[in-house]
Amino acid sequence: MSERRLIIAIDGPAGAGKSTVARHLAAHFGLLNLETGAMYRAFALKTLRAKIDPGDAGGLEKLARETAIILDPTPSGNRVLLDGADVTDLIRDPEVTQAASRVSVHPVIRAWMVDLQREMGRTGGVVMEGRDIGTVVFPDADIKFFLDASPEARSQRRYEQASGPVAVENTPESQDVSQEAVTRDLRERDDRDRNRAQSPLRPAPDAVIVDSTFLTLDQVLERIEAIVRERLAEQNLGDEGLASERPAATERTDATERPQATARLVQG
Image (tube, rainbow, N blue to C red; front, side, top):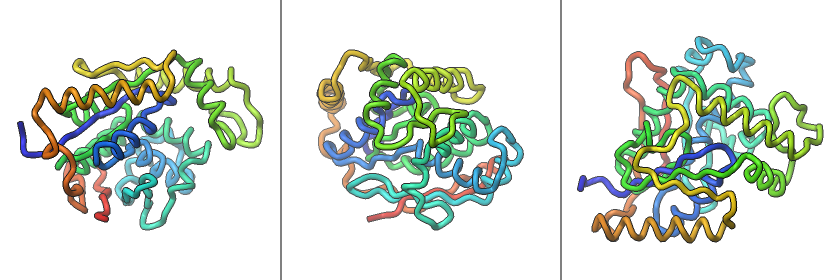
């Protein structure tokens, strides 16, 4: 067993409950919760502000070289700073969510983000959720989950839980959308995620697949928590495998052919 602390990887399609499960595991086992989707949304927000087409890979690469993203873990979730400004609430905007899905398909942007995410979690003591954590970012994670559910189940949950407009691509924010429209949007996002050239969405070979189509949230959390405890016992990790201190404060990608933006965790 390496000296680094526990790493839990959670992957799955949009709306599968990754963020909810990650928050629960982080709080229950004393880990840092690193929400990688927030990083893509922060960059998407900057893309929109700069009026760069999310399909313009060259423009995005140039913009990434001038981008600083900071994740500040708090008891209520990650605070997201973009170039020094708190954008935690702004990145939840439906337009930003749509743009994040589009910028994330570019290999150069995913490679940049993978570098940053690896550096953030390199000391362990983290639960990290996204689309390619167990397959690309941390293929050697101690425990890997792939959360899934049918598009219909995911859209129903998203539709019922939304306190504001539901993000549907090519639909004005002010326009009411049906659950069927949300389902179609999720299918389109699934198709982009599963068929992109870089880091396509798929379960890691050793991931535990949890299909929550017919499960309640409590049932999902109970099942996943039990698996984590079982794996900890099997690997003899005990308390020393959990987070006794936070990851190093500053991380920077050093790949010379990739955008040299900064992302870091703030120590509390």
